[in-house]
Length: 173
Image 1 (tube, rainbow, N blue to C red):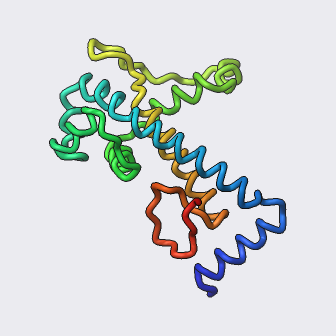
Image 2 (cartoon, rainbow, N blue to C red; image 1 turned 135 degrees about the vertical axis):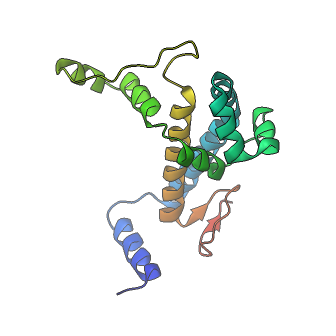
């Protein structure tokens, strides 16, 4: 079985021969996605605060994920890390919130509206709407990080704020 490094190198060379971007284009794309990710991570605390304020069980869950001191820092405006967002996503299933966001932002809702499907009852109780924007933000942050990581991997470059174990990646200059 070939090593992972050889498999990665073979894959990278196969992409370059099929019209991959040039180095300046990778640099531009990485910088844009890094800025976008930073913007979303900066807004994460705002939506975390709304979500935490809705239910006492959300407070307990967030304290368990972040710890009380770190939760207070994030709510006060300190940027969260992708690892912290991921840990929160692992601790609770936010997919129903993301699915509502997805249907609201795409034309798929019209296609699904043609066919009757069994609907789950919505939880519109006194604690607020069923759809929490935090679920949408978590998935957007994780997707943005994935795209950024893939551009860095294929372009052999890393953003200025990134820490990576891959020694062959060069920092954007």
